[in-house]
Length: 146
Ligand SMILES: CC(C)(COP(=O)(O)OP(=O)(O)OC[C@H]1O[C@@H](n2cnc3c(N)ncnc32)[C@H](O)[C@@H]1OP(=O)(O)O)[C@@H](O)C(=O)NCCC(=O)NCCS
Image (cartoon, rainbow, N blue to C red):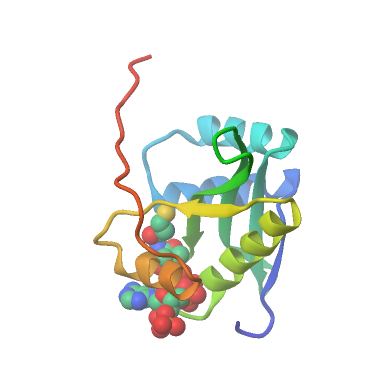
């Protein structure tokens, strides 16, 4: 990891920076909708947002969830989002965020960690493989009309 990068749990005051970063990554939802999701994620005991700080700025974040898996008989960790600001990529920030989640999930009793990514996303696939992930599932998705 580059020197000067600190990974820590997100706090309420990080919301504007997180909304901006999430909007860069996937400009689909509104800032208000994202802020609401951050508020909920910070409040429930199962989600966690971690931020990577460098030069006094938030340069990346990861969102993960601990789910109680009845079939598995153990909690399972799911990575929901990972984003690093373009000017901070390929400096180890993504790996630092990911490794922090792996160790926090393990500490909370998770037996597995799952992450999904489009197959063409070389950077993410490489990062995940370097962290010990192998390709297991076909992920299916359907939109739920509101
Ligand atoms: C994927 C992402 C999080 C990687 O973050 P990062 O901070 O650049 O990752 P790291 O510096 O820790 O690099 C980890 C590995 O990925 C590789 N990598 C990073 N960017 C890459 C790229 N553009 N092409 C190929 N490999 C890449 C690195 O080389 C490194 O592997 P190596 O050590 O074997 O060379 C970042 O590119 C990103 O935010 N992308 C947009 C959002 C996204 O795709 N999120 C993941 C899916 S939800």
